[in-house]
Image (cartoon, rainbow, N blue to C red):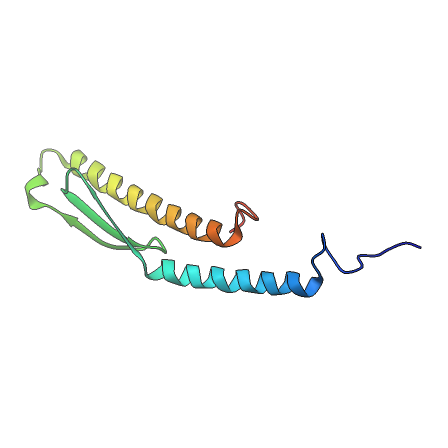
Length: 112
């Protein structure tokens, strides 16, 4: 007599699997909400430029020390701003990946 799924995936019944999936989904939603309000502050050039972004990668502020504003070297200032913004985005991405990885335990790596 052939057996069907019988009760499970590796001994786990469908109800337990669904409960785990729902729990994981709630944890992911909570982590995403926390990330949305979290802010990341990064400086470059020894504090010459400060960038603040949210976990949703929305730039909230850019502060530039007036002492570094040199009309003859705008490129340097642009580089400092670019460096700070990119680092802030990297930190936000790392925080999101860490939060989601902690919930999924590596399950679906790259999907969340």
